[in-house]
Length: 110
Image 1 (cartoon, rainbow, N blue to C red):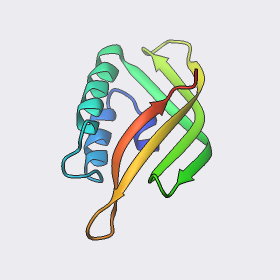
Image 2 (tube, helix red, strand yellow):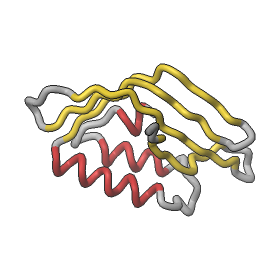
Image 3 (tube, helix red, strand yellow):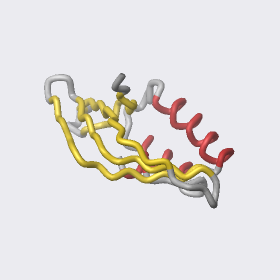
């Protein structure tokens, strides 16, 4: 979570490359989502930090939901925007028994 959500324009691209090393070889839509997010973070000079507070693991569905405080800074001298967000990570287990990241999405609570 920290690698994906505690970033700035200078660090995000490197972090994406690190995350893709622990994903499935096909990457699914994850690579595309992370690449789009990297462009947005660089273009809009966004910095974020995430403080996880609650974890819910579902072994059967191979997911983890993480809820926490998400703080976003737009530009260098902006007032931060603080929100409570939940993200769902899903994983698969490789043939070698290694846990690989499958997907990462924000869970919207309406």
